[in-house]
Length: 286
Ligand SMILES: NC(=O)c1ccc[n+]([C@@H]2O[C@H](COP(=O)([O-])OP(=O)(O)OC[C@H]3O[C@@H](n4cnc5c(N)ncnc54)[C@H](O)[C@@H]3O)[C@@H](O)[C@H]2O)c1
Image (cartoon, rainbow, N blue to C red; front, top):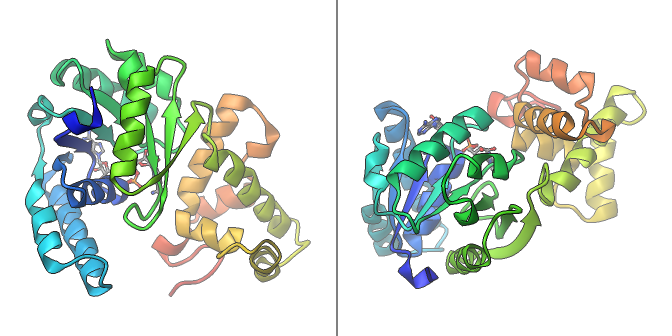
């Protein structure tokens, strides 16, 4: 298959990431079908896509005509049976390996034999998903970053079974969306989260031990390393529940203490302090 053969892209999960992926694919002229678990969630996700495109119009990034055309190319569904003619499917459901494995089994039975199946997982083992299919060489990770329309990077995650042709087509697909592509190994955290998680967790340990304040840690990193945001503010933005989940998954896989979530992080998650989305994390957003 060549990237020019990709006409219809299937996206599973219309949450933050699935909606963003559908949006950028439709804006790049692909027909998109997106599946959700319920009509309410699908409606909510479609409204978020529309709002995001409207924001791009207000910011002068796209015209109103492009927005209308992109929305016209996205179709929502509750049934994966409409994914049969997709050349590429990107799974972006909740970060749960058993759920993703089940979905890959289902997609393998539904999709055309030459279709590429991709996952947007943040840290889970992609070969475990590929092994559920009869096409392991056509399975890989397409790890987009949040918010998808704004973030330039796409990590393409190659498993030990991913074929060269699949990798080549995936790279060309990512570039057709205007993304900068890197190829990452199928190891916990790939490249970005592999480096980011110890950084987050060490910043949290510094707060936990009372050796430095959250403000000083964030200021030091912004001014000393030229990062646009300090690690604690960034952790709040990513979601402390998400960060904790990723750390736990990476620790489970590698049993490396650098990835063990600090007690403070676990307590904050238990208390519902999930960062920006819950209005309280390391900072208050009330
Ligand atoms: N949020 C981020 O910053 C980020 C960044 C990169 C990658 N990811 C990864 O992307 C994936 C999705 O994350 P998200 O932040 O968009 O989560 P989210 O909770 O916003 O969206 C997930 C969606 O999947 C839907 N879903 C669950 N089971 C489904 C099924 N069987 N069929 C159809 N839809 C189903 C849920 O209803 C939900 O709307 C995860 O694997 C996550 O690790 C997230």
